[in-house]
Image 1 (tube, rainbow, N blue to C red):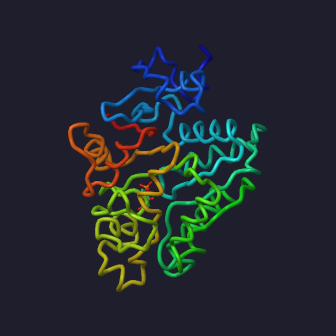
Image 2 (cartoon, protein in one colour):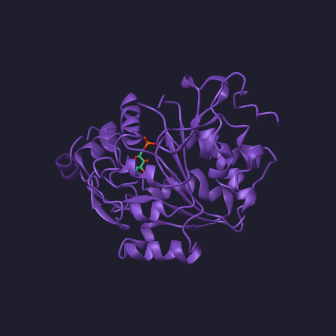
Length: 294
Ligand code: GLP
């Protein structure tokens, strides 16, 4: 068995139940997966458990970096969909640092889409808020040389964004990375979204306004309207997300996210629109990277 990379716990220190190799992404060879703290959840998803408090330098983001790097090495023309938010920041940093540390990944054949965007995308108004396009460029796109597709360029016709994805990846994106909202949203598929929902413009909920703009003192849709913050967003639909060959869900942070993740993965409840993340149980190849106990 190969040595685990430094940032990952040695399996003897962090014992996990091994899963059936036949059910995992064939791109992630047994050798690669045996270096990760990998187990099968009763819901069917695969859990990559990061020790709480990020001990031993292990982080959700660094595990994301490992999965992305492996995907790209195995399939250089991979079509990715990436998220924004705080959760993936350390993953993007780790991907950028690979370039600096001489292990440069070759992104030249890959295509990168992102999950969602405010409507209208904010570029300086209000000044504190940046568009997701700005975030994606700063954190990843400006550093890697991949062909990039930005949601903001498709706001007039959201279905054209799906069409662009399926032109690049007729069978669905190779890898979609997701965060999770405290209300169980995926991208901006808010509670109530159908599993067949299409890429579209949605109204934000109070819960999401509070989660995303609370740091600016904006806690409700009404306050967002009054203060010029966006109250709508464009989101990749659940249907497109669920067509991905591999889905990676990143979950870390406040305890309420752990609560909603546990509900989403409850093997005894069928997927339900009240928690869009629960649809992931119906997908055959989901990795949940988390430091919550699930
Ligand atoms: C936003 C985004 C989601 C993201 C979520 C979690 O609402 N629309 O795509 O996954 O927030 O963000 P964070 O990682 O900052 O908790």
